[in-house]
Length: 100
Length: 118
Length: 119
Image 1: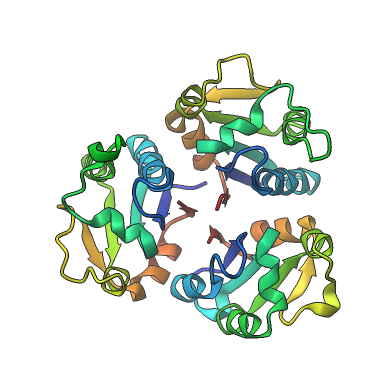
Image 2: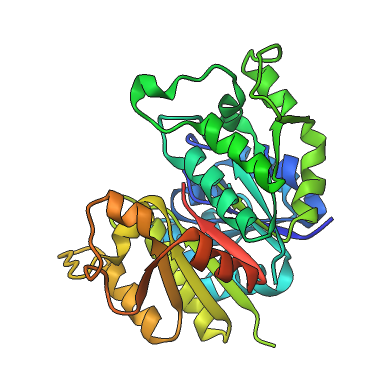
């Protein structure tokens, strides 16, 4: 099995990222990056819980979060990441990238 | 250096371009000798239903786009549970499709060098 | 050996920020020393039109042009491009109007990672 980074772009009501992640990777090997409207997933306590159950690392795009009026302190899951961090995750820390 | 690709088709036929585009992308990789597998999952399983009549809406056929893949040894899978969840457990599916359990997907991600989603 | 990332983007220039995500990712990857290829597919091809002039929004065409200048190989699906009424020569500098079979295949075959930006 391989370390996989999942990329989610859609809002929580459009898509629940946890469903597909749980089917495509084990928790230990699943990393999730939330960008654009998907960042709202990390602000919702219930959704945040389900994401933590399927992915052992959750990252939220720093600029998207700021644009929407929130900051690191508002997160119910994960930590913020910049684009350098996302590239590092894709190129060095995982072997597959799957867009949800 | 990627030698194999997994194409995930998650969108239904004809309302969106995605599923057709994914099948064509898979074909383009396979004609060049890349090992390609396609999985129809989530709403993508609607592409697996036999008897589609895309002419009715003037769209190119996702069934033809699927079966053309067979000439280049592309395996096309449909996820059994996703069909069942949509009330299609007993539906007739497009000839040549391989039925697969959800549980097989993790292995498929790891046995292909790259993955793309439609 | 330098690792290679290929980005397929399939969303158009303005309606969603996806193409901007693709260019930001490419830009960070270049900055970190990776080789980057980008392929525009489906509605994504609209992002390469020359002369985009958004008054207040990010100019994705200009961002792509800057990436091409930095050595990012950018190609797009000609069938998708023609289907939307574009003609060769209407694209920004440094972009190849190409095909899945030739260009995307070569991009993917030489890649260590493939990233899809679409919704």
